[in-house]
Length: 416
Image 1 (tube, rainbow, N blue to C red):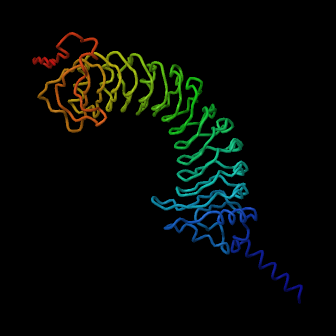
Image 2: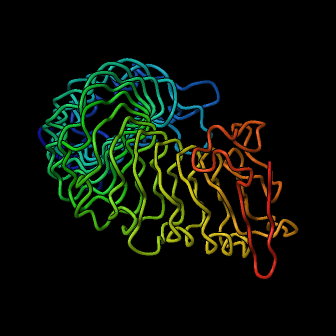
Image 3: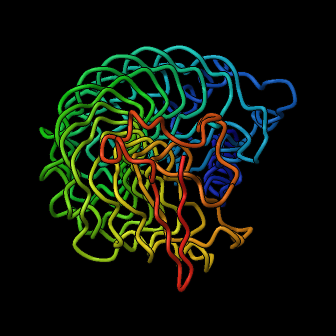
């Protein structure tokens, strides 16, 4: 009788397991314990109810942000992903490294503190790691270089310090590296992945010569602004034919601007606030929507090849000569939305002083070697002075006439 009862019991139990009615009991024990440790180390910030569903008497695969394949956790999205969610607080428990089948790990913006667990290097199946906009400190573990399947690494907007480990740069499958807005130092390691499309390292303290970097031809987006990079741009970006965005602003770059940069199929070129010098002479019409070359030491005349740019910032340089008529025509046709030429040594512009600048366009000519033919609003940083002192306009020194402007049959002469 007793034997028959036990046989019936086990038959029923097996049937229940096969039907999945006890699925929560099948979760890998290591994964179950790891999730418990993760829960103990993190909490909802006021206004967040993310952990409400984390009741360990139920199936953990039904928890918010937990996704399973069979008895293993394969994705863990910690925090309410909806925009404006308060996020989480606490620390990342090292037990997270026990989720050995994990392919995706994210933590929404919040107030998670502490360092990245070294145990992350145990997640050999990890393809997506995004822990941004928290207060993570310490260095980037070199052990992340063991995650050979990793495709996206986003640790942006934290308080990370130290260098970017060279093993991270050597990961073969990386497609997106976003480490911006931290306190990283040292040089940029070589990134070897031929799948790398996005490299965002802006707003750090990275140093070294940019000419020593090697970029894979797969790159489409590069932002290295607000660092301490130096050196020349010559031949640095050769072969990057897929590039659509380049921001190298606010560094210490020197030398001239390579002509080929203007022929890339990019929508945005940001080179402002460096120490670039020399003439700027694109070989063909520039089709880049936004070009910012401001706050450098560029000289020579402004090329008419820039007339096809929608937003052109060439202020605070050493440009001389007259503004090309083709640029003026495009401005008056509202094809150019921003034309900032203030704080140069320009001597003339062909424009009728009675003409109205389109409301959709912004023109600033302050502090050049000419009397302004039109009065247009300029940024506050342009200062109150309308023209340069005569003593600074070397080309025109000793002459009263600083600008001769002609448009169609009209001729206008401005004098001091």
